Length: 246
Image (tube, rainbow, N blue to C red; front, side, top):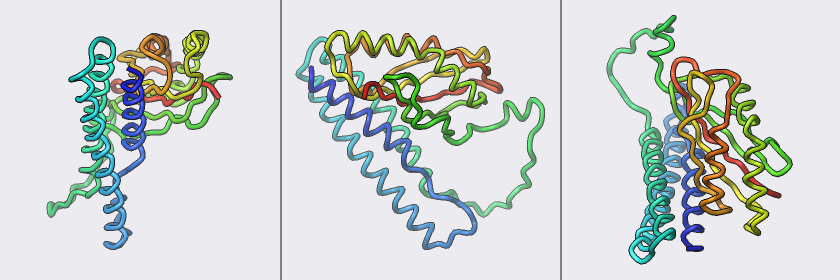
């Protein structure tokens, strides 16, 4: 069981950071073919490495599912489900390594207005909300990003909403430490802000500390997030990487 938790933590940590760290090459017209090729090679090689690591971890999780029972098997199943999501993100990023080519005439792009501006836009690129900020004495925000959704939420509203739930995150950590568990590590908290500024579809994954009880506590705490600004034009999904302890 200890190995499975370690596997789950490693899987989430490696795949999560690989998914957010390698980005598609710039498609600016000023780039020379040589510079563009160098960026594409780096992007593709990194994605290839990430996929290889994901395959290895999937094999290990499958092996554990074949031999484990009870909570250990459930941990392995959760690891597989999250790895599948990360693989999907990696493959999407790989496709973006090579810019699309087209011989079609370029149409004039006009900025939409009114309702068209709110519903006609495609998802914006990943947006950094904050980075390396101390939230409480025991919790530090390593990285916070908008990762999905058509909606727009004021960044300060998101930050204040997470601080609104900070005391509950602290309570989860205090209970964990009180049970004599590992006292430092990271947790990836994902949530979606809706038109009322409330958090929904919350989850905590990739934790490198604690246990199922701790993860569930973090998930419940995330549901108390209240953004001071509602999502406009649709919902918006965010991932917060939180470091607990020293």
